[in-house]
Length: 313
Picture 1 (cartoon, helix red, strand yellow):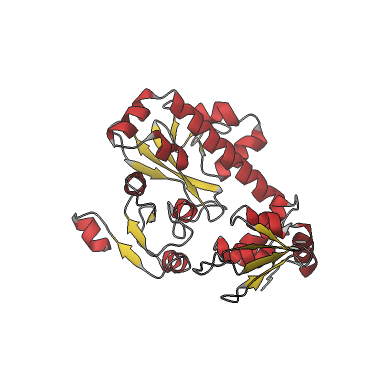
Picture 2 (spheres, rainbow, N blue to C red; picture 1 turned 60 degrees about the vertical axis):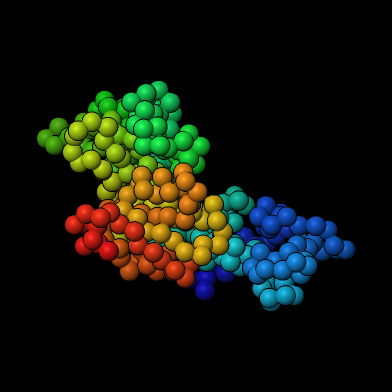
């Protein structure tokens, strides 16, 4: 179960985690003698039968039998894979997760920090982009929904992101590897922004970390939508736009609606339907389905009524 993560590291992560605090952030606990109690988050009940032991760092439900430690709780409540649950607890404890592959964790961490910085840059740019704001308003999107999904704007100039974040060669290398900068052909050492004059939709993984972007052009240029290329963090055929936000809005997903595009997801969320995802312009893959059925037992496809939409359905 632990895969390539050393058992000693797993034990250290569990030892450094305050299970009571971890659960209380998700399920309000009340003191019950030397333990803590709540109504169980894993089944419907009126009388609290879910207990958390501060001494044993263990939870147990006398109603449904759910039990485990901090890792097990995150896997069950946040619907995380084992490694992701360990990684989240490790990050909270200030520990670096051991590498599971060829890429060293410090490099992946640097890539993630660069993506976070880019997402912040695009969000800040949206504030001073009346054309982008007007586009979102015309589409019926509120500021609250735009903020919840981290919507931003890539400025129209060729080097907006480059000037903001590409301070030295190492920073530029990270932006290139993340697919945010492109090297000019035949002009060694010169780069330009991949995304320009586009409304930016950050794509998040299961832990809410930005791993890629989709960008919608504001003028009549092509392509209308541009996605991040394949990178060490982003694999288009595996990702689902809006899944993190759907799980954040509703821990239990009785069904998930699969739609075609970013704005479809956003407009459904705007109108009170948060459990919608999009497949980033690709055909639905077996990886998509595996991810979806980890979170729901019912998947509904709702594509556009044009020829492409009917073919996809």
